[in-house]
Image 1 (cartoon, helix red, strand yellow):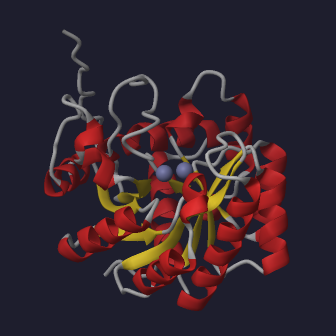
Image 2 (tube, rainbow, N blue to C red; image 1 turned 90 degrees about the horizontal axis):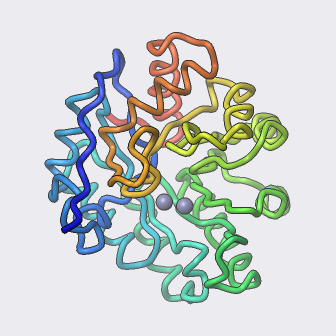
Image 3 (cartoon, rainbow, N blue to C red; image 1 turned 180 degrees about the vertical axis):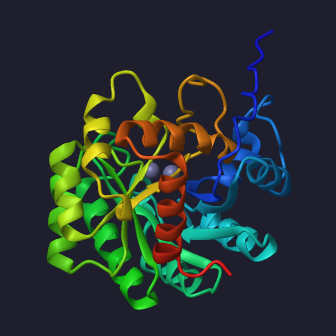
Length: 278
Ligand SMILES: [Zn+2]
Ligand SMILES: [Zn+2]
């Protein structure tokens, strides 16, 4: 019998931060697997708060999951939501589906339109469908005044180009930032936020560490993308928001700044991007 051990709780952070991108519906659903730890949203939130991860943004990837995220945000005081149709699902971004995403985007506890963007690594949706869906989501973010959360996989140039062509919304986040130093400079220049995930701790991620080094603290966010991408040393195990401290401490070391200072910046950036949490 195979059983996956749940990673232990890391040392708590000195200042409360938040997880800018996770998938609570997948974590509590059937896809989470039998050994994925806490199985209710309340448990996941409690476990995160015990180590200084006060709030989470749960991110939708299709109409059903976006509805689920919007409801979870209404039911739990420290949970906020993003709503969108993922680029891998872009062939399902019908007019009707996009209308529903826009309706959800206008709810007060929904603070982001995402994840949307371009994924040239997986080809489950055609590039034409992805581009059309991405453009439509940029429009929704601008009309609703919510942050745009971008999934960019092997598509940096096209993502930047489409944003420039459409005119970016006020707040743009590159989730699971995967660019190099040059890309980080381009994002900083445009005022786009870079959300670092556990991937920055991976051995072969020299590019990402170079990017983190030049990314200005006032544009940095952190995320788990849980249940995916657990930080080192827990690769291969289920990820959850309570593991954020590992990524934050690692980032602080890369940037050569005190953990407390980075946490304070992340907390402030979070309110700037997702609105007041009060
Ligand atoms: Zn993504
Ligand atoms: Zn995601």
